[in-house]
Image 1 (cartoon, rainbow, N blue to C red):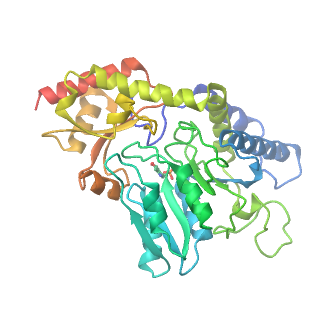
Image 2: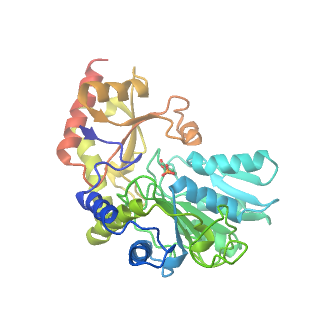
Image 3: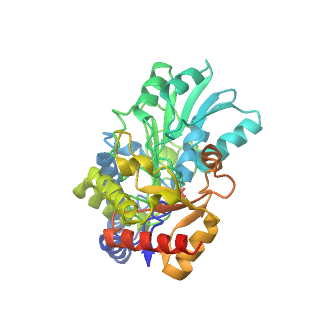
Length: 387
Ligand SMILES: Cc1ncc(COP(=O)(O)O)c(C=O)c1O
């Protein structure tokens, strides 16, 4: 099988990730922080070690303010619902995944907030000047993706962060498609809230993710409960990470995530981005006639003409074939896994003009090889030839 659906979840998981989970499940799998015995202490230590590794990865010196969540959706909901108040104005964009768009749309529909959804330009980028112009005295939050899961475009989040800071608002960045691929420095990029998922480029299992909560952020917990710490307090404690971490965490998942983050720190995130772009370039160069396909977001990854760049995913459509049809042929006849459709980002497809059928998305990962990309290109050429 050739797996080109890493933007959905990375596969295969590195052996170290599987081994790390296996070893942890067999040895210290106790409830962290809940009991004083040695195994519970070991579980707690593993979680804190993972927090420190993530802090290193994201250039953030306060590991206790990195809270574990179920996934990016959980982290984004936690951030949005924790900081936005009635009457606030929020700025977002057409490039967002539904895990940002839906909570904000519902809040707008309920009359709780007002919302500005910024357009993307022809390069699939959000213009920082548009962000600045969208501000009102009520703007509390700018909520944007770092790398689009449809176009792969990397947004200039540091510019958004500077604008938000000048105006006393917060920047929430959805790093689902960038964490582990694009270097992120929460402090230099002026990011207040960074939501990430553990099962994509961080190489961990599903059921893991987190939220980095900057020091300027005042956030209400939306999941309250036991924290294993001071049980006498009648309400959720103020201290991090307990403020946002009610309930027993996914310790098996976090044990795998720890190994994934270690791999990234050892290899360096920049080398992953270089590898991903190389894989896309290999695919493009191996096609007999790239001009016969419609490309969405690939142009600059392949040409690498400008600095903003793209992560290793691309939308590609073939005249005469619905995206779902191409994906089914790739799966059934060539054993190639891709994802077709709207990718949970309908506004992005409206922006591209590919709504409602979407695109075929190829997304590469750390373990994708050049040979696999050449085989995928040959499969596309064969399908195109049959049209
Ligand atoms: C840009 C973006 N945001 C959010 C998510 C949601 O991630 P999760 O399913 O891990 O919650 C995804 C997943 O596809 C995504 O691509």
